Length: 223
Image (cartoon, one colour):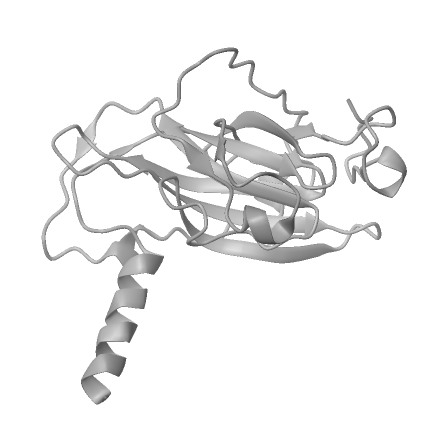
């Protein structure tokens, strides 16, 4: 029994951080964002260390890794997510690794919005990882509130018929009862205190939640 407990702890540890392998450090993370009330999904991207906003969620991608062709495919991001309440108070929702191949592994728990990683892009240089290097060495220190100021509104990506690397399935979609459990298109992200970009999926004409309007702490109008 003790051996089983130790094995379980080790397995959980591996699931919470990327496996050791050569990797590519990318400057841009691409996300998908879902409004569970309207069922609308948008794709958007954020530069590393840039704070962006999706609905009431503010997100900051700190690291975005992909793998070279000779490694097993894996795309990971270290993400900070906070919710902005109507009184302009911030609540931390997520701070950890997110995996494009397993969006349900470390999912954001929110009743209205969901965000998951679909792609890391823009990087070319391969980082050789020593066998003795600990994955925890990659975890960055949290950004200060001052470092997240001066943001501008985000624009959803216009993907058209762009192909995806693999079909995505919304985690716990059937349980949520908001979207079918089938494959989903790709998408992108959002952050804190004066985000650089923001997009609000609910509009007055779209039958969104809470009267169709989404709260924008930065004072920007809904699109």
